[in-house]
Amino acid sequence: MEMIKGVMFLASMWGWLFIVYKKGKVPVLFVPVMTSVGISLFLYAGALTGMLNPSSWLVVGAGLLGFGFFIKNVAEKNVSFPAPTLFSVCFGSGILIFTVLTLGFRFEHYDNFSHWAMIVKSMLITDQLPDARNQLVTFKNYPPGCAVFIYYVCKFLGNAQGVMLLAQNSILFSCFLAVFGIIKEKQRFLLYSFLGMGCSLLSYLNLTIRINNLLVDFLLPLLAMAAIAFVYQSLDSLWKTSLCTALILGFTCIVKNTGIVFAGFVLAYYIWNIGKKKGIAAWIKAVTVCMTVCLALIPYVVWNLYVRCRFSGIEQKFQLAFGKQESLAVSKEQYGQITEEFVKAAFSISNRAILAFFLCNIAAVLAVLFVRIFLKKQWKLGRVLIVVDLMTIVYHIGILGLYLFSMPEEEAVRLAGFDRYACSIMVLAAGLLFMQATIDMEHSFAVRIEGNGTYRAFSSPAAKLRYQYMVLATMMIGVNFLYSEINGLLYIQSNYSQSLAGRMETLAGDRWQEEEDQRKYLVAASDREGQVSNGEVFYVSRYFLNAPNVEVTERLDAGNMDEIKKEYDVLIILDESAVHSGTADVENAVWNRSGVYPLKDN
Image 1 (cartoon, rainbow, N blue to C red):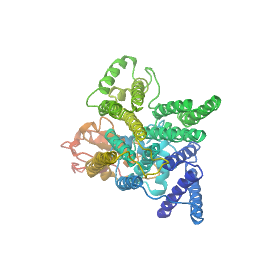
Image 2: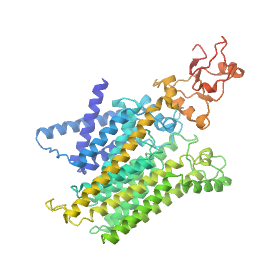
Image 3: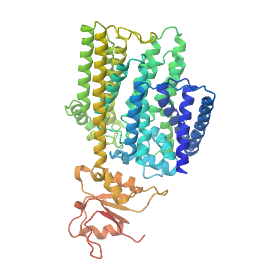
């Protein structure tokens, strides 16, 4: 049965891809991202109306009809398969490698267990969004944009952690593919190798997030880049550009609350492009812009209304408070301290994002000067650099506001997640600079291939030789960064059994019972690297046990064993160092090893 469901799912996805390409007239490189976004938004609507399970089957059924339509077109010879290109072979090989690796990955970051994986697990068990009675999903006001798509994939391909990661990474890969849609001279492989090098360099900024996690801080900037690429490439078709841009941004807004910031940056670029377009009446431009903005914001607005109605009276994370003492947010007296710490962190040389910021600025300025002095050409990269820097500054101001007015005090004081937030905007900044540099490079060739064939692609043999050297250099740099990323991921995976998640899964397993386990668990663990004090053990234990009643202690000794046996149903010793001499049960059997110990007969 599982095999049949898997085949149905794959055939359905192919059918949807074909429909979006054939009937939607979407450029081929944008088809995967538009398909993923469209399916996610439909499932999101189904989830809000309590029809998540029927919606997923409806999507599969419609996709199978699309697959039948594809077979019909093949039989009638109405489908022509393009010949493989060097870019398609390279990109396809990379996707294949990362797909195989992803299926073997396990969650590493504890935020997977505090929310991003927990909500998917809950949805797969209950076939619905978490309600107010759900005790396992703590942050119920987090938008479920990615969660509904991961749910959809896992419903038909299995609920293994590798499948969850593959579902989210498929959206990442589709965004990367869409970014290459900005290239118009398809036969200039240097443009692909240079932009591919830039995309691989983004992995340097992704070390705090990594693709072996369901955290979405890396996905947000990539969605923004994909939307910008679509606006740039498809502006000749105004209505299609507006609709597709709105769909991508609507999904971006429900991936995470901060997604609306990234959507705002894209909308600013979209409005600027529409404004400078000639030959279109001003009222048509105004209507188009209003339609795009409204459609993009509808999913976000609907989600906030849903949260307000379904979870009214429940304290939620990231609620605007502006210093009110009754809120979890920080008080006004702490604004100065947090602002000072924020500025220090933002300009610290140990901050990967600020290093990338300065390196991007230096590289962009040098590139503009080199082209201006030696090639006698003017690149738009310099102007884009100014806009990107302003965007980065505005974003950081917004994140500071998040810490001051919205984030719980305990997290705001220690600037929780700052590295992820900072690197997220730098992924977008660096990505936009590489995209603009690619466009400028495309316009700098002395001989244009587009529409003229490749009979004469270079101005001289020396120019061709320089071109080949540049292709080789960009390929080597890009492959080196990808190889480094793969090695890093494999190293993390090889140490999974020694990680907190690996040790807990070994002891307790990964439980998927339909009903929440209401027994009371006590987990004994040492506080090494703050794994107890920052809540890691708590959230990891709840995920694997699928039980809400979990408490964690750093110390077990004979003095508190009687109270523990009365209050808890199960004791889990995760770290032997948390057990002190004299700990014994009533039968004098000393518990000094990691394990699961039932304390009551039931």
